[in-house]
Image 1 (tube, one colour):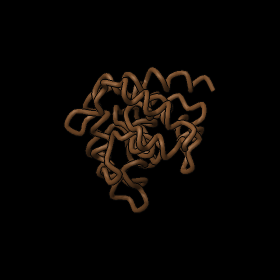
Image 2 (spheres, one colour):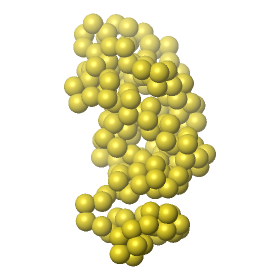
Image 3 (cartoon, rainbow, N blue to C red):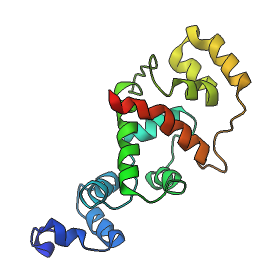
Length: 173
């Protein structure tokens, strides 16, 4: 890429995003997350970046299957959010903040802004992560909830809005 674009990032980013993404993916060591990060953060291209935090949060909340591909997860967001680089950047940053602070490999659910969502939409996972102390409360929340998780394997606008509304305060941390 350095030779092709004369080490000019602006020349590289002037390419059609889908073509540039394919060129980036052809570079050894650059995968979808890195290619999309370059497009979003350096190029301002509206493409949603999926990382381990995003995958872990969505999986634990029952919004994706554990074996969902990068492209499937990315499509969940891009199919319901307007194509806006600033919005994708902010949404990803909020998920990273929750992932770093709470939804770690060993979860820290206490104080997590998404805890109520987990209790409501995925009570069995909540029991596993929160332990016996939260079981009675989880059961009550699950019985009161009428919200379905996704439609045909997709996040609904209301779920994205709910996640956005709850994750938004984390940015102040």
